[in-house]
Length: 163
Image 1 (cartoon, rainbow, N blue to C red):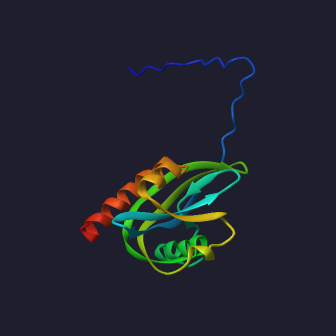
Image 2 (image 1 turned 135 degrees about the horizontal axis):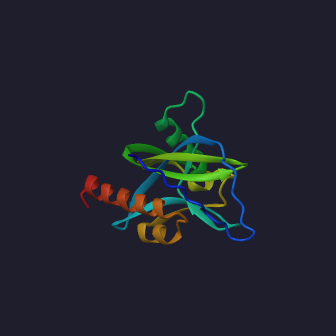
Image 3 (image 1 turned 90 degrees about the vertical axis):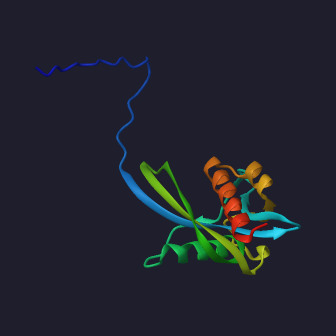
């Protein structure tokens, strides 16, 4: 015989049950651009002053655009630097809510090297773009999953370049 248990939950006074939100999937792509400076790996990070948020360059694909194309375009637009893809990195997945919709977002990242451009040419989306050491990136980046990805990218760059 299969049994059934009923559980009654009593909410604290004043508590409300949130409505079920619609869920949408979202995809972005970006890059971790690295270079060597005095024997140390530096990576590009982007920052906003108010509120202070530091992140990696990334964005949403245009219609018909391949994910690699999106990563290169977003790096160019947000940092001013033209990046060439060296290899694919892990993706990051997270949830967020905006305007009453819950999003399940996956961001695909690529390890890149600079092949042109200049950080002074970055777009208006960020206030500042900087080349920083991996240690400084770990201290500044606002999201832990991006910190871990930068560390992984630095390890891959060291193996690739054998330094």
